[in-house]
Amino acid sequence: MQQIDEASLQKAIADHPEFVVGIKARMSKSVVGENGITPLVKAKEMQKKSGLPLMVHIGNNPPNLDDIADLLTKGDIITHCFNGKPNRILDDNGNLKPSIQRALARGVILDVGHGGESFSFKVAEQAMRIGTYPDIISSDIYHKNRINGPVYSLAFVMTKFLCMGFSIQQIIDCVTKKAADLLH
Image 1 (cartoon, rainbow, N blue to C red):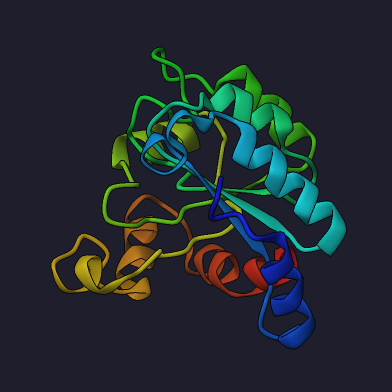
Image 2: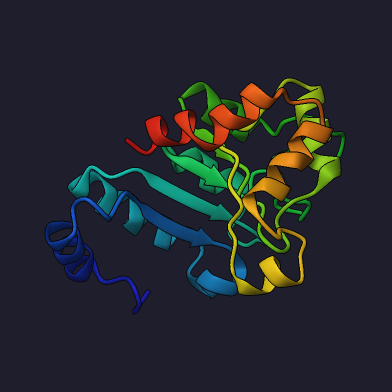
């Protein structure tokens, strides 16, 4: 909580309005520790003041994904949506969790955010089998997952979706037009 600095965020927005396109809240145990859902509540307050889109990183719980999803509103983005961790969008029977169904009905956006440990073919294929598709396909690339995999490049991530049956046009739209539109 001590790293949340609203004054610095507002200054960055004022100084670099063409560069700051959103706020990201990393909501996984390794980041929030015992603070639970409180950092997301604070991020939502900061979002309301700034008017910027909010991207929420989901990882290992706590906090529980249901608590996270229930706070999200239209235009908010869940990234790492196809992770295979216990705090994933699917229940143990392979169905979309009710909290995620409600969030999507409110207009919450799904982003792949592949990353080094945040993508599961099994989860992605099952989600798409039941009609749940990503709005944005992104890599969440950094040095380690670029050099050692499993990301390597955005083109590599895009190819995974081609292998799962997406058309080239769907993939291109998810990494360009849809991503740009959803991030304003």
